[in-house]
Length: 120
Image 1 (tube, rainbow, N blue to C red):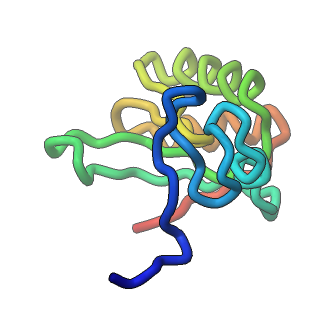
Image 2: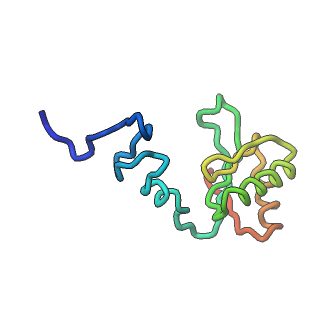
């Protein structure tokens, strides 16, 4: 039987699931905090329209904002109100239901955020 370098303890009754990288319980994981640090961004928000995986419904997506979670949620709420539509904030991405790219670009530029249209 081959020995794997990433093998080892996966679950412990004391701490629950274990991180395969640092071998600590996931609640005390050291490497997930390093991975959660915001990746370097160029300061330009990219606004695009997507339909993939949504049953043909279009969604306006805003990516590339260098904001923390609370500020991102507040901006998402402002954009949803400006568009008069629903939406959500997931994984650092603002999703607004419907095709509102032009309205979102205008709203972002009024707030002083550099934004450009991405995609086709």
